[in-house]
Image (tube, rainbow, N blue to C red; front, side, top):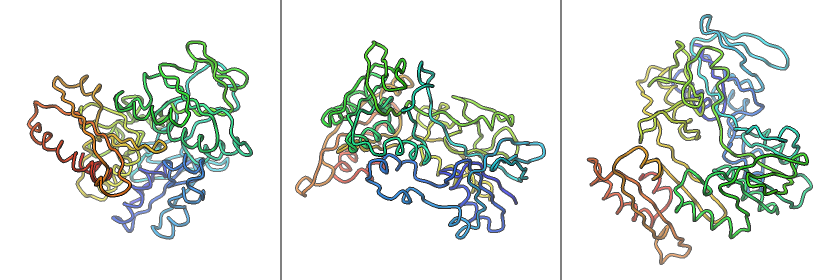
Length: 410
């Protein structure tokens, strides 16, 4: 069997390596339009700050190591520009040339791309960046080379925005955050995000919430907000979210759904026979709300890659959806979430109960114990209500242990 995989980061490479373990004789080709595959995109902000010192540490695998260990044919800087589901071929562009490659099964894992808003003056800005991959990081670091401080602005206070905030503060920048939501970390409820706000303010970060960037002036050096406030900025990072990278899929007649994501069945197959998809580009079923959702996280992508490999190898697997578990460090604070927040819960369910509890992250008598606060949102009317009430006690116990145990618990 000949299997082609488009996209060589989380979902795609997880599928490739798992396939090799299950199908020793299969021909497996991985195309990626970027120069790097299997890199740690979650670690990018920490290389900027110098916490991850060596750039090579961001590279989980290289094409050479993947060839040696797994006998995978990995082709970076090779962009699949077209798919023909009838002839079962893909067209590949490489260094100005194009060629075709046939497949028996095709797995799409194109990921997501940063949302870039259409703002006046943005096209003339020379100091505005997004961060999604290693070339993006290199571009930012080149711009910052030789600078010792200055003014930096983060547009968007989600996970990437907050991680970049810490990195830029550590590099000596005066950092301003612009967030259109009422509070930072919008995926959290406000009272939980308040801990993050307090931590940011304690580090001298300036916050503009309930505000959006309206336009850029002076080649990006001035950002104009909705209320007319002008923010001076030497470097600006756009971190307002991501959207599925599905233009290739759409051109092949693959059906798209929520936010332009690829629709797949329980076996990750699209409406085009023998074409499968995983990762940030697909629409998933939210296990809590049972509605279509977009969950662009590395952990679900890796799991989906493993599962689609099992399916192609003949092992029964079903895509049951995702919950969405994420964790972020902001200076001396760690914030984590799993499932949905209280606001979304009340939008989807008639009965919602909430429990807050606080404790220490390990036994208080042992040196180094720090505070931990947990919010549990649940439906008290379901058959699970008694289980959840017991879970509250378990959560208290886990608060005296570790975040990792907490995440396994919930």
